[in-house]
Length: 184
Image (tube, rainbow, N blue to C red; front, side, top):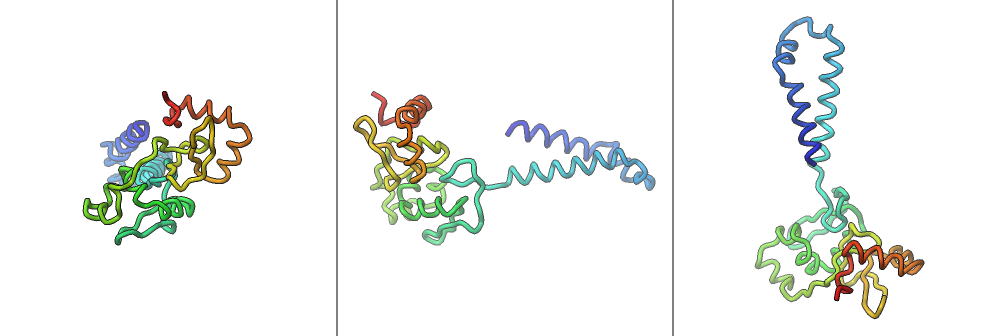
């Protein structure tokens, strides 16, 4: 993110420099193709930087941009997600996700949270899928038993992958701190 802001600063400096302003006021500036290419390239880069910074991130699948066609409505609020899987997960456990994800909690007043039963929700120790660690799980998520404890997984594909090599996936997820239920 810092790289983007530094790049943005440099692009703005080029665009709004004294030389740029003088050149634009000069009626023959169109003859300076090299400078015009630089200016146009800078504007294009600035446009893409702004677009990426303005993109809203999915609250359930971290790192993915929301899709305006994938949403859920709850208590008059439209909540955008990246895909139908996130909509389905949220719709299956809205109170859980509102309690677990600060970005969702901010969207609702204390009174609305009370109506939804958010205060009665008991959060799981585990927050993320060990196979897809960018995805928030919930109590309705797929599960596997491992070493006498329940591990929550995002989807049936994560479940299938886990079953192929549970010890390797367990070690990797445990080392990354994704399975707090196994800490002594």
